Length: 311
Image (cartoon, rainbow, N blue to C red; front, side, top):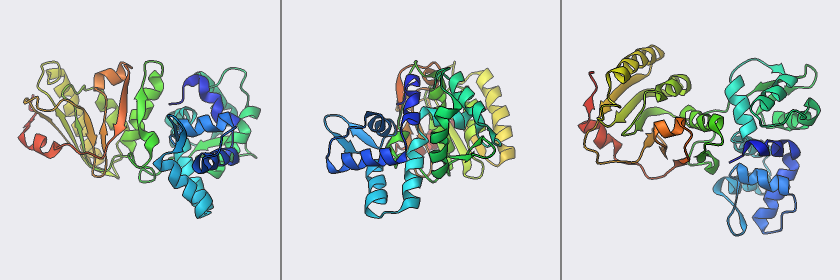
């Protein structure tokens, strides 16, 4: 995970250096470019346990860049990986689908989140803006001196296919903790199930903003029956949330399963499954992880036996 004090790393390298370092790891050669190697690790393209090696996402990028020699695929795969870095997450979260803003505004935004320090200038950022424009992560106008974030397609980098979508939740990074959750929520498609014995209504705030009504048809919330979870207050929040999501075209239901047969927390859609932290610990910035997994729990069984909330 990219810590705030490492924010400069993205601005200290470029695409040719990253690809050169990636190739060196792929063929087993020494990597002498420490900045490029660190960025590759932060994006999940390289893992460095004993000896550096390419992850599944890194292998896909290697094949596109050096086997197929496909520039379009190379830019797409590298762009997907770069989007997981904290500077891009901050830009994505703050700018979203907004119109272009002055380049100085982006630099000031990064400084606001302590990703770069007060001595970092537009001149430092421009080379990176230019190559991120090539990757279609940003639209950078050198004439107008403006930057616009380009949202990624939800299908472009599904969790579990790109390893870097696994993310640590840390008290050191309260902003990026929520940004990581939002990134996963944006990828959800079809019927979405969030199963958490201690599901907190605070999560509804993220769901209402991040679920894409053009991709998601139904949301199922499955919780335990503890009084502080299935409370009158959370039911009122749920009713308001359900009614608003219905207007957007997403059917919502919250059911209670009092068996306590399951203890892990899950976020599941039609194609992917994640282990997620307890809602309350995530927003409290306690250490945990969001992990994609190939194993899918029997959530349909839990859902069928659970009781719909009526109060």
